[in-house]
Length: 245
Image (cartoon, rainbow, N blue to C red; front, side, top):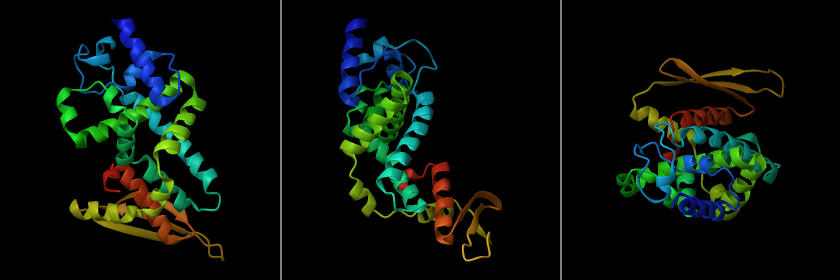
């Protein structure tokens, strides 16, 4: 039974990713949600190692970093004449939780996951779980087959097959608007500190976002508006407000 289940999972992962898995245990870890306590549950799940810490959270951390790096490289090469603000905004549109959750559904990743049965009845929870699992899968590919294969999966499977870049570009996202809405709802005091870093014609604006008297982020840019947006983009990621983007 263990061999049959493992072979079945191996085939499914190869179909899903386009990459032949070698160290299957890493992929099982990527597909295991932290809600699973009894690893003897259903499907492929009976072959999982019995360990309370055997879930995809650590791989998610690793995959998130790799995803950011690859997407940044793709955008840098695809839009050679666009500025930092545009590239940052496009990266956020691609890697936000909502988008990653949608991609997890599109590629069929949810169907392979091990999680508590009640979570499968919660569409909102499934999106977050799926997005996290997709990042964990990227981490698993990286550990199993290296950076080149992980980058290939992101470029050709996720971005190449499932993302409509033109549609993403046409959808305006204001991180400042999202952050200010959050601050108002949470009754937070938001202030901005502005400085000019260079008094010549190449002057730049140093902008600091201050929340309840505490400095959060400082950005330097030729445009004060863009510096504000970059500060708020980081704040949105810190607060995990991607669902609102």
